[in-house]
Length: 207
Length: 99
Image (cartoon, rainbow over all chains, first blue to last red):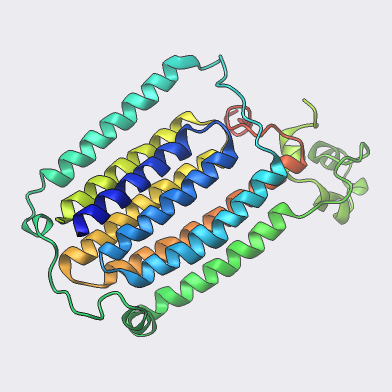
């Protein structure tokens, strides 16, 4: 029974991964990634990682993918064909490279000769991977990692808000650039200097 | 099922993600391919945790999930900022840093 579930979940996960890369429309890519995550959650369950599987479905397939869907809907999934500048030559090289990487990882895994990889795994006890055990580990042995992770999430949330906020006056033609500031320091007041950062770096719009 | 099967699935998913990062031009899809690679690493971590009967690999996988969520938040913020500045949503066009 476990074999049937494994192959089913593995095929779903692999098909989702392939679909994510192959689909031209980013919206379909996101949906394929959701399929991939659900298949992966089933694999986690087979590996007795209940809490990781639940977090995968709730956090990843739920929250993070909704964020992706919103951004795809906002930006609009314009899918252009591959540019002629690089052409199919570079694409073939990229595919060759990832094939080589697959062969290398496969040799490293299968040729490692580790005894522990050929069996189903040991040291299993009924509460293995339950929220109870994971919580205990998080709050005792890995308390520092837990706190740092919470801090990292806070920093990322603040950074994302700052990056994506609406800057007023971006399309103002009277906008100052860094060169203007260098030329006449007296005219560069602080709010003007704060206004455009990425756009000045990238040049005028509509280029 | 031996653990090697899970590691093979993880290797294939990781290579697929690498192929996506290398061939796709839309930064959204590049981010999705990065997610694939992180998930492949997660699967390998959980598989090794099962092989050794040790739950610490699962803790590692959860921390990787947190880092992936942060990466998604910042990456999508960057894409929204690109869109607001009417820059092309295309990683080949955005090469100011290349000189």
